Length: 269
Image 1 (spheres, rainbow, N blue to C red):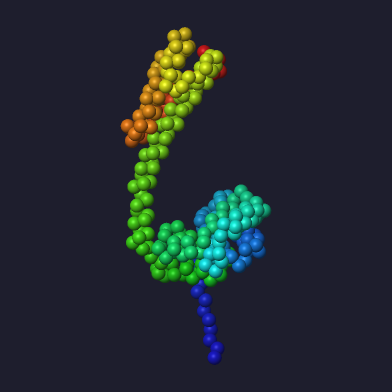
Image 2: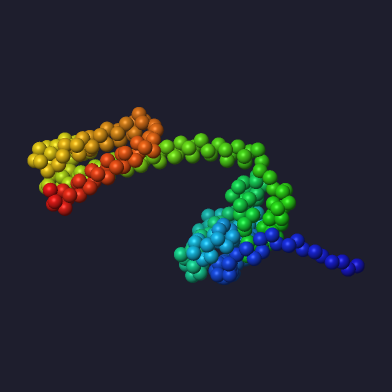
């Protein structure tokens, strides 16, 4: 009995540039030659798969390794890293960005509707596929891959942590400004043949060696003292929130201080 077999149309066909595809094929050919029995999928994903940047940006490639049929131990992982690094260097070291996932990990991401897996499936273009990637793409387009309550809460719970991280980065930015003040002050004192003191004595030495001699306005010694006190408050947890306007003022003050120290270092004082 004969009957026609109708294949489903690929949803992402022709969504990539020729240049990117040539690089991806060259990379995939070399990888498959080395790891044929270990590879489940090699796929393009990201902006290159959507023709957004041509070959100007990174070329993101996903490699899914079979850890169900094959034992992926430390020895395999090390050999894989070395060979993969060599292949990337041979093909296109400046643009290729390789993401490797175990099959079991990728399956868990897909099963829970993880946004990372969903985006890879939505935009991904399989170069080598053992019958895993395209069927999952079709299931996604059919609406049969849905996020679980657990994955939903897992992602939501990251948000408060990320918000706190944002505040932490601003505080770290203030500490960077503090070190800009201290380092430039040390350089100015060294230019005066003075041994740079510990940060808590920088303001005093600026007054003693520069302000008293008329080489520096007193406000800059006060700036050094202010930033030292501010750094202690941040490090001891007394300052937990720095507003954007405050940071801008701190940056302006530190920048002016550094410019003034530069004049001393260059001998313009």
